[in-house]
Image (cartoon, rainbow, N blue to C red; front, side, top):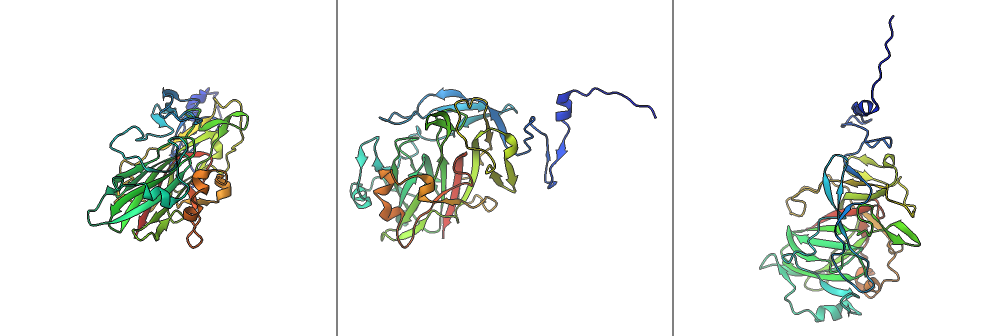
Length: 335
């Protein structure tokens, strides 16, 4: 039998389709890290398009960048937000060191509102009051209508009140963003390291017009990831159905993260609407106060009677990875 020596270029070998073990899709390895997921992958810092979208004494810069993936797609990092959009209302301050509005109790904060903050969704609806602490940033929709966004993109840490008038049932949809100093790398300067992976977390309590708790954040909410970074080795990531997992990835700090990877997924255009089908999204993951690290933050501890109610304790929620997942959408329908 005759034999032949055929020299096949390496790039051609990498383009040979490989079938994943569950036969759900064909995948091509991106590089030697063997990434088979559904995300677009970028590597290295993003191009800065805005160095800082908000000024705050003692606050960190809040940059916006553009990251270009290996497939040529371009992604806004850490997220496309409505912070500078005038048609998206700001939440009211509950505790905000940046504006020096620092209430010691929720009742004091509510008494300072004149009613002009209430977003009307249904004229014959009930006024609902939401108390939110987000690390770092949130945008909230009710039945697809913008009702409130965070006053501070990054730091100082703050908390907020959002009020809206609506009939039940209604659907809460929130964009949550863990901001980054090193744009496109999901990192910040911390603990003596220039590239430290920050963490997220959001807790909220919704009260009805009689001041009774209507619902709180917990594992019954839906939560989906759309931006994960920093990733040092792409082979540490995996997907189980629609769940995007990075629990096997290291979160070690570093002084040189310029070669880190980031994963990006496209956000559905109608994700905030009540008709959007979130049934295939994974449930939110709950985290303790200690895991999020709020015991030294007065924007939280001044209001533990709200967030840590003895009969209905609200839980911090996020996706499965509160450190590496930086853009998360959450949804819940109040019946």
